[in-house]
Image (tube, rainbow, N blue to C red; front, side, top):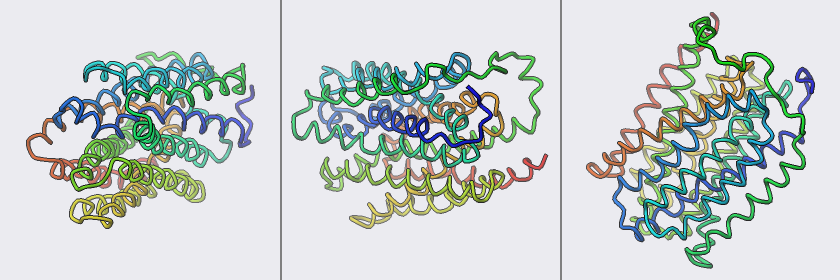
Length: 392
């Protein structure tokens, strides 16, 4: 398969985006069911935080491993197995008899989610031609859309059929796996150089590339931490304000869906401006998102919900550009590079979330979210150095 073709392969981008949509349905089940699980098992904020921490650690922190393996062995079977096993394990969440078994099935199911993400993101680099940013944005939009409707999807099942019927949700994952098995080429893409990670090679990497990667990684980490804090605690925040479980599902849908649309806009303008100006688009997204999120918890009612959803539009819009910049830094290891800013950053945020859950038990939800706003401000300031470093 010729990787040098400068064409935008619509079919493979669409397959990757569709698979991303289905596989990301499942990690968000726990977000939509947080109020239900809290009542069922009598959870503290620390235990609630641990639900999302385990999810992120499993489906994100392990992504560099799967990124390396997919670069070396090809993408097809990682992408096929992802939706299948995520569906089988995570859909069992409603029939688990205790909190600890919920943690176990979340960990196992999200390993499959982790296996899907690096080769899916790398396919934008391989099949995006001269429009890699918009390719990344389309694939990211698929994931954001799936993650957004996942909470509502499982909430509707629980509201209409009952908590014990969550295994019905396996069906989309099984169907998606069969379609990917049929349509992804048997001759899957492999990186034929730099697939073996050697310390001698790592030592030879230019410091400029490492500094650039650190800036993108820190930006991704701070965004992911704020993102997961919001998704963990705002369902409880809005529930305490009198919002119904079904309406919370709609709010989470709007938050993620508009964020995915924001990613499409950011990818389009980044391609227009040139990839060297992508860091400015990321900065703009953060500048717009942070005050909207801050004032979400200073207002009430519909105004609070509108600010929250608009904050998601700008915050999530930065995701595909961070992935694109990482791929530009390491073009020979796109799966691994993508996993660092898409997986390792989110996994690190998941580890941090364990401690923030304990903090929230002490100081409350709103103050914890305000503290989580600090790191994106620092990232915003650090990104001002990116264009100067890029010239090196």
